[in-house]
Amino acid sequence: MSREKGKTQPLGRRAFLATAAALPSVVSAGPEFSQKTLQVWACGGLAEALIPANRRFREKTGIEIAFTGAFAAALGKSLQGSATTDVFAGRVLALAKKLRATGKMMYFKPLCFTRYVVVTPKGNPAHISDIRDLATPGVRVILAPDASPPGGEAVTGILKKAGIVDQAMKNTVIKGSCVQRTLEDLIAGKGDASVVEFRLTRMPSFQGKVDIIPIPESLFPPGPLTFTIGVMNSAPDKTLAGHFVEFIRSAEGQRFFEAAGFIPAESEEGARLVTKLGVKDV
Image 1 (spheres, rainbow, N blue to C red):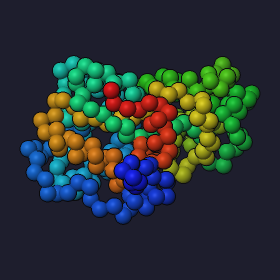
Image 2 (image 1 turned 30 degrees about the horizontal axis):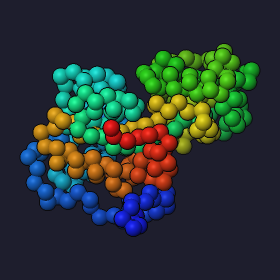
Image 3 (image 1 turned 180 degrees about the vertical axis):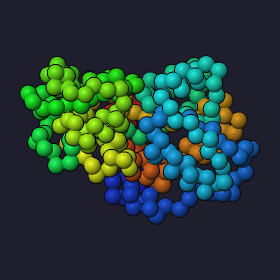
Image 4 (image 1 turned 30 degrees about the vertical axis):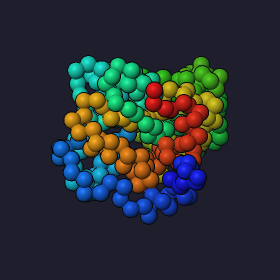
């Protein structure tokens, strides 16, 4: 982050990546903490970024990360009950606000954002150029409408906003419940197009195996776009939990989210989305 007249300025993409590569440790091995293991719960979709980020944090601090990645709503429900963790990185801003309002979470900060794209098999044999092409007769669509929320619901919402949900559903040759299986079927040539989160195309199993067509941001439902990270009031060592959150939000930590296909909150585009979507603690 650059500073001008005492104010924090968001980094542009090039500056962000350059800083991420050159920045010295923001969390030194020096501080003494009251525990040697930090418990981190997160939405399963964040695993591709958090697993290597957790490993780096351990290298820098010697602190082990006990990581649990699962369906965010299920974790949130547990945390609203008797379950506890030190740090929670969840999807959907309303969940973080609810945890704060009920006194379960000490504070939260913006972590990253997701976006949706149309994907086709490599070479785009059906010549898809726009999401509305999924409504063209003869185009074979593969979707996962029954995927855990917000997966299936978000894609259905995008199709509705585009005005093609009925036609696209008629063209759907495979209706599943797993977004990763959707990509597997698409790559295998069982369909011509699908709608998925961009982050999925960065997974090792899928990277470089599909063509990607942008979807206008105006079609995105705002709820599923936002990921936050916060310190829970149940954390025994809130200083340690806070150090972890700040590392994850540092240029070095955010690099893992960039690599995994997310839009880092601490970037120029992320700063725009923080303002647009109102991602702030309450």
